[in-house]
Image (cartoon, rainbow, N blue to C red; front, top):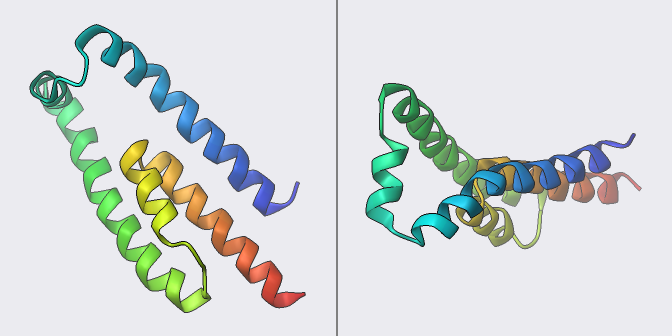
Length: 108
């Protein structure tokens, strides 16, 4: 399987799995940010994962900005929007797919 295909499969998994938890939350609570953050930081373990994802998001934004420009990747806004809409689990594989597609294009 080509690396681009692996990244696309990871994009799908990175969307479906997080949303399998988020959609039921929204159906039950709506977009109540107070409840969202209460549950996100409900205990030390969930807080650990929350901060891990927040820091990883910032790292992804820096990676997209720096490496994306260096590799000449177009539409660098897309992984950032994906990160904000779903999370690192979509934003990172989407950026890696876009970068791989650009690098393959340059080799051919």
